[in-house]
Length: 290
Image 1 (cartoon, one colour):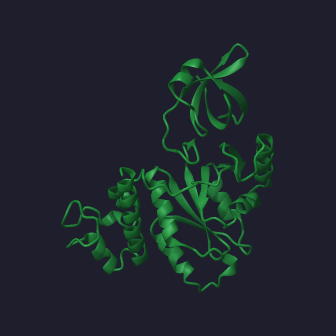
Image 2: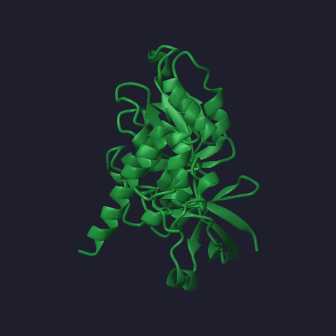
Image 3: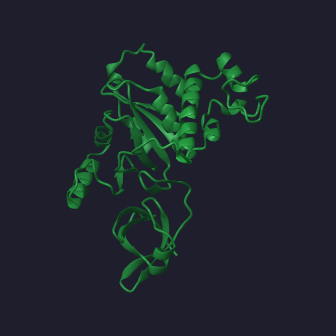
């Protein structure tokens, strides 16, 4: 039975893309509708049924998100601005932890770098992220767009990051069709471009991008506070080396993480952000049951 990926859903009409890059419409068969609801990004098996194509099975997902409702995402583009609004390493760390917890790889995209001098301290911060294993792409009017195109090629991406950083402008610079398509869909649904609630994958830069504003909120209620350390790459070499197995790296003695920070093996900022994120996550979890 052939397989394809869902790239758009409107009512019970599913737009599929197969391995031969053919795009066609399918419907969910009765038994499937009773069993589970397919979402954009799902891989499905389909068959021809009396003049129409029917989805028979949704294949296992490698990951999924609720906001936006999408599955099998390869990467989250964490778009931040160098200036106006100011770069926030804490927001970067929060978003990277959230997407890694969903088994999605973050890619840090920094815009407006043409507005900061080459000796700006921001470049040291970006080096720390690179050293920590996060791919960083620098964007500005004085920089070629090739690095962004390489990031998108062959990948399913979602956008997240600061508001006001020009995420839409960035994507439109890569592929003008993206803006035209999203305007057409929003017009058909009778809603403004930025209020559309459905998810669709658009081809851009040799890959596919979800036409949503990314994560609409930083929801920490689904995140286990004690697992946050697992999603910080700089922490990983030192995990399990603390005196106490349940060490949270706050005030405990003989903490390997705090020692690594003191020795300069973990950036101070990363550790400080961890403490704040751990606190927020713990409070969110506790308030969930009040």
